[in-house]
Image (tube, rainbow, N blue to C red; front, side):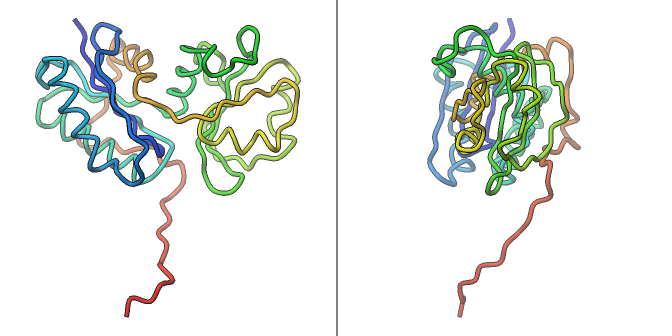
Length: 235
């Protein structure tokens, strides 16, 4: 019997799930602004009680490794590390883009109702600044074809893939790209990655024993965190 705790806090959506033998047993989410730190641990405690489990009954904790929000990733990873340190359970980490691909592949009719059949490519997008996104190109079965990188989107972006067939752009950065990428093979799903979609890649990582070093694991920020100074006068 395999039980996993899943934590996804890389974007504006804070979500967590508890899975048992490949089935989501409990799920929580909130898009309340700046509430990740106050909600993540509460969600996990509530779900474990709902399922009648303790932390020791679980086999591993899986967290989103990014790219995404600096603060959100720190909250998720800190929470996951705390659970692993306290229980001795292994830590798993799944890329945010991989979660979005799994989200698209798991529920194609939900995210692409206007597309008949499967897309040839899935292009997950995490919103960055202005017309920039964190992205990579995947096949529908989850094979990553390009490196994860920041990209500034214009009307020529991903033309080589769009010319080959239907492409699904999915994530919280997809919506703004719909105004720029006008190719007939482009389909868009504006959504946040969620913890329940982590189940398949997390299960695969667990079965392959791809565990992270709890002491030294760091999120994949992709770009350095830039602190800003408020222009408001404090005195």
